[in-house]
Image 1 (cartoon, rainbow, N blue to C red):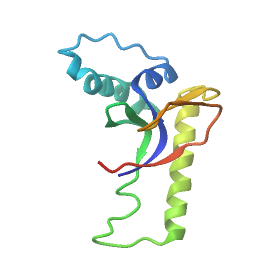
Image 2 (cartoon, rainbow, N blue to C red):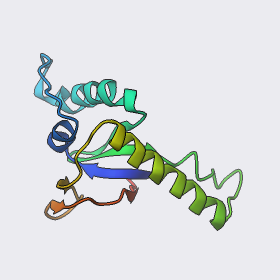
Image 3 (cartoon, helix red, strand yellow):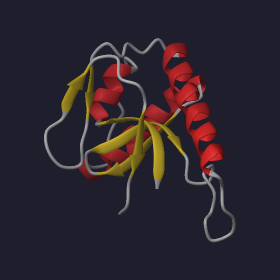
Length: 130
């Protein structure tokens, strides 16, 4: 799976979009899914998505798997791939700007290791294999 955007945790996603999740939870197990659905309802109007990749790794951005080609059926040139990446990088930046998200300080989440505070980062290319 290939994504472009910002790898964050739930709390950071809520903070970035100035959202408060107050819905009644069915159980603590449902927290991720219910919160993901809530965040998506709120941020889809800005043309961007929210994905849960793993327990504490989530992405604000776009899933590029279908955009970069299905290698079992077709191939895509490097030039085309770079153009697609740049197009979706711009879409991420435009959506974040439209939503008035302040990226001056954002906590980037990693699968392993400590989260990192970054200042005004460009969107990331995230490759996730589960």
